[in-house]
Length: 356
Image (cartoon, rainbow, N blue to C red; front, side):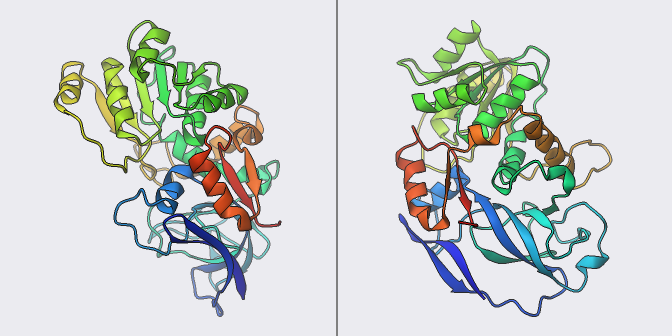
């Protein structure tokens, strides 16, 4: 079988080309999936396409947020539990059959074999039953980044009326800000690109601002009339994290939602001193902090969070088409990556439509 695959050959060089996929016969725990739509995760993928991530070895097959159809399953999938999801070495498998639509941790590949039992805790497959029918496959691919964004709010000790500042209004930051606003917080979104702030306002965020001439922490204090209660850094920029601590008030929380990758030098002592003196909680909000299924002692799970975010989309709180700015053919991958990297004022979020 020939599969079209998006492949990063070297720094700044991306190709979509047909490659042979040998899969038959499928083993227990394997399922062949035909991709219908895959979302570009800008932070993760641009760090690989443009060599920002340290120690990266090429070639790389990017992507992890896909929606597809099951073409064929291994011999044991029909014996799984109804519903549910799979991921991690000891997870039960959901019942699957050919034709089922699934959300899965798949790269930008036309066809791929999902291998249950070999996956890390960040990889999963979730059957999308009839309750997900209102979402097109392109829209449903946003569910995965919705999960990422929820890590920026669920660990916070949020109180009604809290002052919340979100640094970075890319897709993850924007969704996070919308979720905080829906939870009753007073929210300010800040971004270094004015058009991203305008895009956030168009997507429903009440208060979003561009860079201006003042530091981010000063803009936040001006808006709130003082320090924020919660600050979320969704940029992964270390300078942004320093600014987040600087505008976070006493007993506040700073959540690191973006992944810092680039080198940054500063005198860190004033930052540590403020965290110490203001009793600020610094929280790592990396994806994967919640179990797949509900466990004793916590209501949160990926299963619950996916269903919750899907409901928010179908009810209109998060409009996928207001978030996703570009839908392209996989063959346009380099154009999309270049746009997201060099023209963030017009490229906000992109998806590949594999039916094109």
